[in-house]
Amino acid sequence: MAMTIHVDIVSAEAEIFSGTANMVFAPAEMGEVGIAPRHTPLLTRLKAGEVRVQVEGKEEQFFYVSGGMLEIQPHMVTVLADTAMRAADLDEAAAQRVKARAEKAMVDKKSDFDYAKAQAELAEAVAQLRTIKHLREKAGR
Image 1 (cartoon, one colour):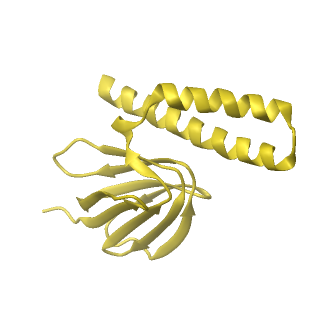
Image 2 (tube, helix red, strand yellow):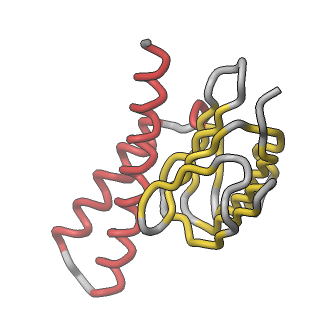
């Protein structure tokens, strides 16, 4: 039997995933991190993006997180996300609308606050669209 690590992905609203995995990939603030069983302990911020969970004998599972914290212990990974959902539940049309609205707001530059908010919305929308694209590419293989 292969070594596994327990994974919990939770948001403020609900627990999205709880189970064992062989490998986890998450969008840490300084870049994507790959987490295998017995990983060195780590606590880091997450940026908006995709969390991938690999379970032996099953299809890789994809989740979207808007940011949050990642805690890694040798036998446990906890993703505490501001917002988290299964990638299949993402709404591409809504993400496209948010992206367009944020790009327009960034061009208008009415105030520093509006610009910063638009930047954050744009980053989240782009991360959602990237997750949707990656999920489609995996399904097409």
